[in-house]
Image (cartoon, rainbow, N blue to C red):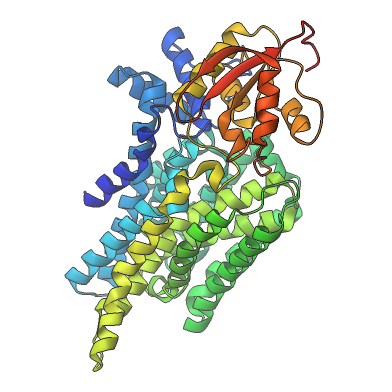
Length: 535
């Protein structure tokens, strides 16, 4: 319960700045929920229809209906609860593994609490699980499917078969990347179960895995999902990584302890190498380089990741360790595919988003490692015992130190996640009262297109051209004072800072038709001349 409460509390922090959903994607769910509540059915128009967002949109609609709170206001509390469920799952898995390792009950409780608290507070995972997006539900679905499917192949009971089929049927309607991760995870679980169960049960598991792959590929192909097309466009490469996943899943539990620790260490070092390289030059051309503040907050997570690599032998010698191992290997396979696929923003997105699904397994492994080293056994050297014991609180401190990166916005990342009330109100004004095309940065234009998909006529292209030395926009502009400090959002590229003089010159030469104060003052201005058709 403590872990769950901490998880919810951390994921409601964005409410300190705004009652609106944390991140723009939340508006893509609030809009259809608003439509559903007013029309009595889910929207089917092209602008509202998202083939992989129906489950989350329906869930948000139900929560709004039950509580009487608008989708915009209930979205963040709802995702705070959903995003905390994997933390509880981490506690449950760690507790089972500790018992199977025959640790003392007190030691097991410490390890379980530590795993849950690390996952609840660690910055990168916190940022994604606090965001109002169907990926939050996908993180839960992947963990639950791994547990349910593993129970199915272990016991062969009809109840587990029914639950597996139910979760698989909902997956493609929930989140596209989570669906592919889920399919990879149960593929790895099936490979791990080959030596542990009967042929009949393995055959049933094989049918479930094959059916899942056919279902998701067929559904996403028919619906024209661009995310799946990036995988389908390189079928040979994807099948190669699928084969690597199966081989590693079969080989790793039976190899030496050194090799078991070496494989994830190699993967971690590769990730750190890419991270450091991206600090100096974007690995994926056209995307943002890593900001110094983001690198600083990420380093404690890397330390936790290194500790996690030392814990792999704990899960290869326990019955339920296969669940954690599959949840580690599945996302790694998709990351490998993305990094060897193409150096574009789309494949960077696959790699960056896939790594989020590793964090649950990593938290469990890191907690098992530090508790084993720090609390089990004693040395004759008193000072070494003190040092070893300090590993336990240090892991949690490292997680807490990294937490600010979740909410840093343009100061550390290429996208602003918090939607300020004055931003939402100004954008609503522009959508309602500006008849022609208007201009702003990527944050506000996406805000408009996500929440008002049938009404907005905005663009960020003209602003981009102006920031790169072109002419000032000859149409209405929504501008913010923060453009002169953290910069204007040009996602996926790095934000572009506007000089104070340049900004003031632009504003003074235009008619201000809307002004909003706040932590970040905001203006809507139009050209002095009547010719406003150059956007």
